[in-house]
Length: 472
Ligand code: G6P
Image 1 (cartoon, protein in one colour):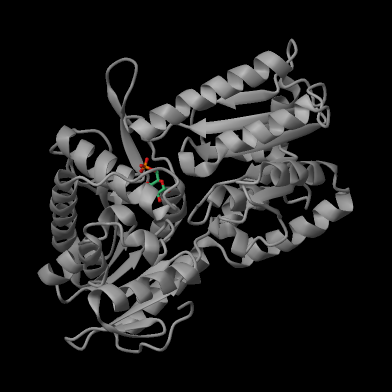
Image 2: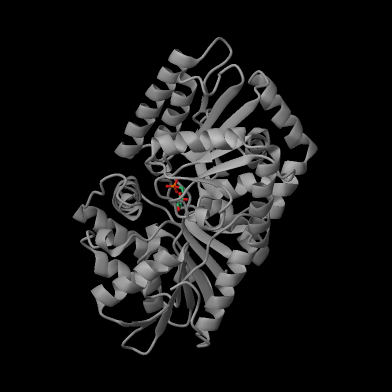
């Protein structure tokens, strides 16, 4: 099977899980990348190359719910060194403003190279002559150059879903030059924000010494690589439709009832990740309750924390810290049947998430650094009555588009407390003015528009029609 369009990401959209009865099955993979790309690939009829989770080997290409999936297996040691190690204990913290300290280990780097080669080889096998391969995210930054070597006929795009750090931080990476050269194998390198694209172009000039001109990098062999911003989005219409359905609204009512019909529900939904600012946000909310500004009799904070990267030490430490904080806040501030925080360490299907978004009066998204944050956009899509309030970190990519949110600096606890109160007390008129503007923004810039823009630009630059793209 050879395909005109190949999407390659570290993860397949489904994750191999072992059920309680010992049999294996599939579950939707966590995170924003999968939520965004799944509807795109459905429309395009391409194939998706990725790791199915776990360490099972010998899985054959298969179809799941109409998607053509090509699994790439990892051994237990490779999961440890490539996925938990280099991807998530080196690159992830380094690219997120060193919110946690990145670890640099040479064996992890070796594994990163060999797994990137495996992904590149798999893509080379399944891409049709002259086809397009769209490489995704920080786990696969060497794939573009490796693939170009194997298949110079292909059009290669790369998209980074997470932030690209300023050069002061990126320079720490012992393998900085190899990563930049890996990315330069692409014809088009896409980022969430113009600042990220500029960081990349500047680094290429400084570290690799290529001539650059705004969004273009000129390579000595005559090839031009383009770098630009393509802020990712969601399936807006799909979310809104779900939010309007009878069953979701019924479920939203049930959720409110189960919580004792509070006047106001605050909601946080995140992978349990130290970049997300969950601890600080719950602390800020706890202080407001302690100070009597918010009363547990009529308010509750629902925090959904989706389990993530549980074998990585920083994630385990974070889980314990949040468990302790929630226990303390509920012990000190809660009453019978009235917790201050309703804490759910679990993942939920889209329908249940839509019901929570419908039930929530104030959505709280306060990462220290985030490429985009699609939860903020999903909330907006679900508020079709133009109500509800969004508190959003300035350090999420989404803040560049959702200017009418209550924007906060998550490092500023008092600032966050004031924003919670303002959002909580804002008049219906004020909330609807802000929500209407944000809904317009997301509805006009949905994920289909994002993919179409990237793929059209990729086709243009691949065909040598390389005008100066936006963003750098
Ligand atoms: C973020 C990353 C994705 C990643 C997802 C879930 O959205 O950008 O590349 O797949 O988190 O993380 P995980 O480590 O479970 O794949």
